[in-house]
Every structure is written in structure tokens, then in C-alpha cells.
Length: 280
Ligand SMILES: [Zn+2]
Image (cartoon, rainbow, N blue to C red):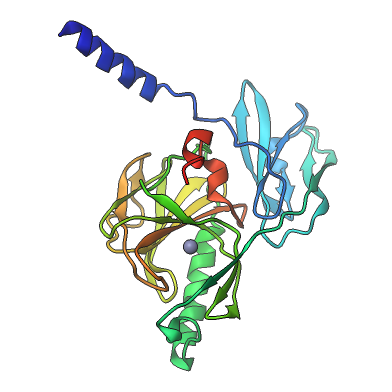
């Protein structure tokens, strides 16, 4: 009996002490990926900018590392991070972005209005786009941002990030998130600590929640059946924020999970530990 208790304790300890907190993901300098750049010791980390935007900085053993989101529209080639030394001297750190080919995907949507919206839908779509962009580009100062995520839903990846999409044979924007299929009502969990910055019911995205994790790292959850959190609420890793649904433009119940970093939509898979991202 005691031995079993000890075993359970050990398992719990192992689970709670997994060293995933401040470790940045691996560098994947491609469009839709993340560039990881170690900052020289004399750089003021708060001064770091990529395309005039502040970037996320992690700190481990007094070493600062910039974690830079690269949008799908990023041109392969030389890019640079602008910064200042602690004495205020400007400095640029160059890095290369490599090309990446994403596959094509063709989807048939029965509700044609969701592919070719009517005039009266357009006003709503434009208004919603502003609100969505405001949430995704949100910046909040916060130390020790958790950049390793837990998978938000127990389910299979049904559509990866970056696919070049055609809806009813018409070209549309590339897939800016990762889709996880699961039955309606399956709980959706926060992948890391954060604050709910917005929720809403959108024309394309359906019921949606935005979580601010700090320093320009924002995650987005779409097509939800129910939303179980309100703006301003603090969430911890694993807290339920809502349930899987099929609201908005969908072909079946799934979560569209988006990750925005310095206002670039990046591949959510890059934030999952290898064990979780290897799931199909
Ligand atoms: Zn999606």
C-alpha cells in the first residue's frame, strides 16, 4: 500500500517538475516559423525590435534569447533584429530566413455564403477583422513567458499549419493555424498560463477565445461550441476555456488553434514538446 502511494507520488512529482518552463522552442527560420537568437550580453533586451515590433525575450541563466515570429509572407533571405547596447549604441543582428513549401489543400464548403459572403456580411467581416487583429497583435509586458505549450485538445491533427487553401476551388489565405479534430463537446484547455483578452462570435471563426501569454505571444481558439471563460480571466495550463464545436466556416467539429508572435501567425506545432507534436 505504502509502496503504491510512493509510486503515485513519484509520478506526480515527475509530472509537475518537467523542466519545460522558460525553454524556447527550436529555431525554425522559415515563413510561418520562429527564429531563435541569443542576444550578446551587452544588449538591452527591451530594445530588441523586428520590423519595428517588440519581440519576446526569454531569460535563462542570465542569458537573453529573442524568440521571433516570422509570418507566412516573410521573404526568404537576410533579415535583422534591431537592438541597442546597454550604453544605448544601436546594433543589428542579422539572421537568415529559409524558404519553405507548404502543401495545397482543397476544401468544399456547403454554405456558399461562408465562401462568397453577401454584401450585408461584409460590414460584419471587416469589423470583426479589426477586432481579431487587435487581439492578435496585443502586447503585454510580462516576465518568464511560458513558450512551451501543452496540446489544447486531445485529438488528432486534421489540418496542419500553412496549407495553401482553396475553398470551393477558389484560392484563399493560407491556413494560419492548426486544426485538431475531436467530437463536439470535447474540452479545450489553455496550453500555457495567460489572460483571456477577448472572446466573440465571428462570421468565419465562430465562437472564439484569445489568450494573451505575454510579450506578444497570443493564442486563438475558433469554432467552439461553448465559451467557458470571460475577458479578464486568468487561466493556468490545462484550465478548460470552452468546448469543441462547429461554429463559423467548418466542415466538421474541430478546433482551429492559432498562435501569434510579434503579430506573425506561426505554426503552433513549434511550441509543443517533441512528444506531443509527433502525434498525427
Ligand atoms: Zn483551421
